[in-house]
Amino acid sequence: MSVVYAETLNTESLWQGVRAKPADVQRDFQWGDEQTGQLLSDLQRAVDEGANAYFLGSVIASRHHHTLIIYDGLQRLTALTVLMAVLRDHPKTEEALAERLEACVSDDDGFRLFVPHATPALDIEVQQRGEAGKIRRRHLQQACAKQIRFAASLFRKRLKQMEASEINALGQFLLRKTMLIVIEVNDIDLARQIFVTTNTRGLGLSEAEIFKGQLVELAAPFGLDRQVLTLWKQLSVHDAQIDNFLRAVDFLERGRTITDGSLLYLTDRLREHAAEDPASLGQWLDLLEQRFKAWRLLIHGLNTPDAEALDVALARLRLFKWPEWHPLALELMVRFRESKARGRQTIAAQRIRKLATRCMGLQLAEFEPHERAKIFRNALTELRGGYDPMEGALRLRASHIARLKTNLHGDQADRSQNLSLLRWLEGELAGDGRIDHLQNTSVEHILPRNPAPGSDWEIDIPDEAERQAACHALGNLCLMPHSFNESRLGNQDYAGKRKAVQNASPEDGLGHFRLIHSAFSQPRWTLEAINSRTDWIRRLILEKLDLLATPEPEDDTPDEPEGRPVEVETARLQDSPSRPMA
Image: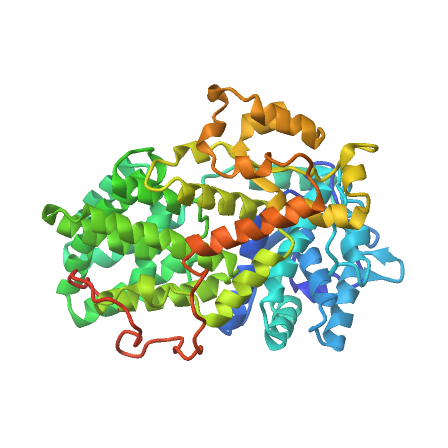
């Protein structure tokens, strides 16, 4: 008879006396920056909010002696292993905590997690003690190994911004309060069947659908359930990212960090208000409809190439994949719809364009999601108080500007960051014109990451360490159409790349890109040429961020406004403030 045994364990208990490897049905590690970043953000938020525990899901496994054969949960276990190793090797981690983390990563018999195709990134670069804190540049062949390295790099970068107390609190929470349900199955066929069932059967409810059910139940005693269902039909007809819309609405109401599951607490807030004022729920539903109409305009501008000034400005926000800017953009679009009859499109476009610039500054300064949430909460308070948040809460402080400048001087190995930065910069250089040509683009490393042996690259930059550092310098990067980059440049020497660019036809589309000339106008691509272009691009970025000549005043602005807008030198806005956060 087959037996299924389930147990709830924290991370530290899970790894006591066992090791793990994937079953034959499992994939290699495939999580990207979004998934690994979300994991760390969720853990940080749980620590900040004093959560009793954080549930990470279930792991399905069969046991062979002291080895767990993982059928489901490999992605989470791998990401946790990488995070534990990076925390273990961080210089700010307390020694006792580092020893406990090490015990979860390896024992006297070897490493606890084995993933095929992850060598050398998982075992040598991560699990080996003392190695997870190092930056690696040597090219890797296996996609799985690359993803491991990218995960370690992301964790290192995020931890770099944290204080020692925050790092140690995170490590303690990870070991003691991060929980998983381990489902052990002693029959391999049954384990495979459970894997297939959990991954292919059933229809999961979206967060929006769960909220709809809560809202209908809340509205029924007030006779408003039909209004909710009618409104939901409007929301469902349009492909307008309903979950993201409702999370933005939740932030406008509660001002809490946007994350999976946060929407479910909005009903509690609405229920409290309805108990105090029965008419408030009907008023809120009317406001929800107006917000959705504004959201549709926002989504149209983000996704549809258009020559209208507002849509051109909105297209720039598409570069930022994090959601904390959504509520402020939605509030601005609500105000735009209210004042549209007064011909205020130009003003709205200017604000959205400025918002994209401020978002780029926040991204380059590498704020954590909870920090961005605080900044945008302050920005909404300022906006509703009649102040301009673009010149208030969203302007970087002196310490943040210093951090941004330091990041621009460092290693530019973050692929997604490079892509969004260069797209934004090319968009700024394009002025007020359309930027849809930036969509199908990729970042070209002029000096390649893996130059061919005996190539001119090794002659012009003979030292391998200098060559690897120069490869990831800002001045070595260039944005261009992906098809041209792949088919015409490849891994050839600089002379060949330069000739291909100079001989490009108008159909290749290089004429839309302003930074290409500076990259391929040199006779040879040397360290001096790379360093010179790096300095030039860095100054250009600071100029477009309005930071090149910005004085760095004393940093004495309070984090949270208390009852009124932060006292900053900002222009008064003419819009009438909308409904404030509850």
